[in-house]
Image (cartoon, rainbow, N blue to C red; front, side, top):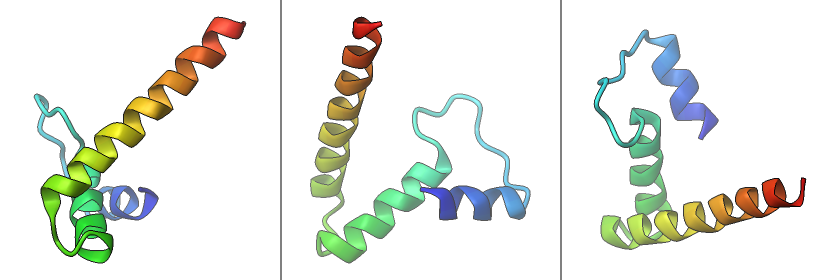
Length: 66
C-alpha cells in the first residue's frame, strides 16, 4: 500500500478526521478489485477483511508470547 499512500502525501492530500479506512486503503481496494477480482468490490472487501483479521490475530499471538 505504499504507492497510493506516498502519492497522496506527495500531492498534499488531507485525510478526513472521522474515517474508518485511509484514502490509500480505499485506492488500494479499488486497484486490487480491478486487477484481481474482475472489478467485484464486495469480494475484495471480504478478502481484505479476512486478511486483516488474520494479520491482527498473528500480531496478538506474537504479543502474547512476550
